[in-house]
Structures are given as structure tokens and as C-alpha cells.
Image (cartoon, rainbow, N blue to C red):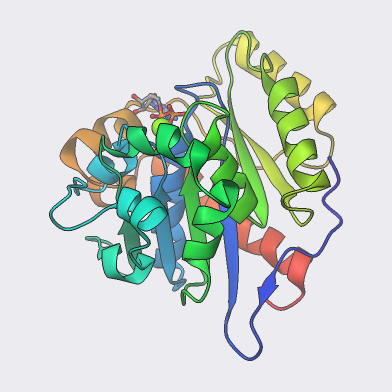
Length: 273
Ligand SMILES: Nc1ncnc2c1ncn2[C@@H]1O[C@H](COP(=O)(O)OP(=O)(O)O)[C@@H](O)[C@H]1O
Ligand SMILES: [Mg+2]
């Protein structure tokens, strides 16, 4: 997958926002963990960040201590009722980090969007004119219309890959989807990087998977590798990103490093940030 394109959205004189989708149709590979903690550490680096929880399971929202509900509005309202994203975005406990929450009703969007006009562009349209440095979109574990909305709205893609057996299984299908999106709906979509997650340095399997991923995606695999770390798995049940739960853990250090690497990669691509 080429990464040569310039992938920024330049408003006339407005700020430059980088929109990144975190996607892999496999469940349990670390999409949500990556979205929450990358978002939190980008915010710590003084970036204004919006996380979009595009998964009806709402794990990103609850992991940040927020539950989406129909009273205060959530992503469903944004995608199907035309409610402005700014009216639904909520502050989180992390300075500079906001959230567009999901709730189970978002599952209905998967069905209702199918017959909607401009169905693939709903999220993209909703994110126009928002004033953030980064928007991170946590995609659901499928290649349905919600994920498609994420890929169409994004400038770049991060693919988390779990350092386990069958890590690369299904990636061909994701790559094909990305290529189809590039041919039509979003020619600008680039691959920022493949992220190896849940890496266990004590097993040769993890090392082998890492090597295999590097072979398949030369130059695009992040240097940062996310270790398997129980503190990362515990933090969401306290509704906290790792920086507020155990900032000295290995998992925290890895996501802090990832935020730095994402900012460096953004700079290389845009020359401005
Ligand atoms: N690096 C890690 N070390 C240990 N557990 C992790 C790690 N990353 C994610 N997990 C746990 O693995 C499960 C799946 O991760 P999650 O981020 O929810 O994946 P996805 O969003 O792709 O379904 C969750 O229970 C999460 O807490
Ligand atoms: Mg998830």
C-alpha cells in the first residue's frame, strides 16, 4: 500500500486536522486500546484530539469513563439525525481529549445507513469544520458501512495486528477494501502504519509474527511495538486511559512512544505538523 500521498485536509485558512482511522475487521486486536491510549498521549503532547467511537459496543466510550446515551446524544444522532458533531462531543478526564460517544443504538445505524443517501460520507461530512489537531476513529470489527464511513472520513489508516497465530489472516480483505475505497470514495486514504500489539517478548511466536508483518508491510510497520501488558487490559474497567491508571507501566511507555511516532509520521507526510 502506497503512503506517498499528501494526506492533509487544508481549510482555506483554518487549522490542519489529521483524521486517522484505526481499523481491522478482526475483533480483539487492540483497536480500542490503541485509540484510547494514542489519543490520551497525543493530548498530553498538547494536541487537541477528538476520538470517534464508531463501534456500537461502545468500548472506547466506557474505557474513557463515558457511556453514550440517547439523552445527551451520541454518534447515531450525528450520522442519522444530522446533529452537529460539536453538539455531541464531550470532554473527557484527559485535558485536550474529547469524545464522540457510541451507544448500542449505533448498531441500528449499520442497517439504517444502507438506504441513506450518501451513506458512505455521513461521518466525513460530520467532521468537516471541526477544530482539532487529530481525530481518531475507532472502527468496529467488521467491514460494514460503519467501517466504510471511517475509511472514507480518514486521511490515514492505522492497522493494529495482534502478535499471535493468524495475525495476518483477513488482512488481505482489509487491504482490498482500502484499495476499493481509494479507487472511488476516498483517493486520499493512506496507510500510516501497521502496529504490532500484545507482543510477548518471551515467545518466539511473537517475534516471528513481528518479522512476518514487517515482510508483508515493509517500511510501514511502526517501530513502536505494544507489549502484552495486563495493566493495559485492566485500565478500561476503571474508565481510565493507561496514563491515569499506571503511567509507569510498560504499556504506558509504549503508547507514549507511539504518540511520538505518529506525530513524526504526520510531519513527514505534511511537512507542516
Ligand atoms: N497490549 C495489551 N496487553 C494486554 N491486553 C490487551 C492489550 N491490548 C488490548 N488488550 C486487551 O485485549 C482485549 C481486546 O482489545 P481491544 O483493544 O478491545 O481490541 P479491539 O478493539 O480490536 O476489539 C481487551 O480486553 C483489551 O483490554
Ligand atoms: Mg474495539
